[in-house]
Image (cartoon, rainbow, N blue to C red; front, side, top):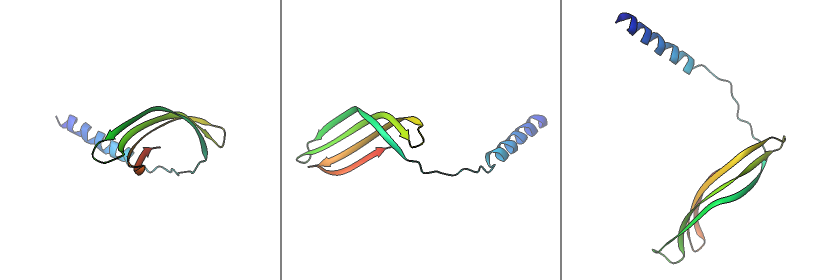
Length: 92
């Protein structure tokens, strides 16, 4: 039982040691251009006010970075508009 406890303690200490190891990482601003298309758009009228609607969208495409690299692009978002004014949120 003592050996099992010591082994467990050693694993925990070793895990914390590796988990708190400092990593030197820096954020970098990159420029890119998006080529996207709409995959899904759902428009739902809300009857509580005139011209009130909520909706969701999904876009896919490719991001082309300034250095020539490319990456897949996926974005989703929602909106809540009354007569063309309201909130818009997206996961870019």
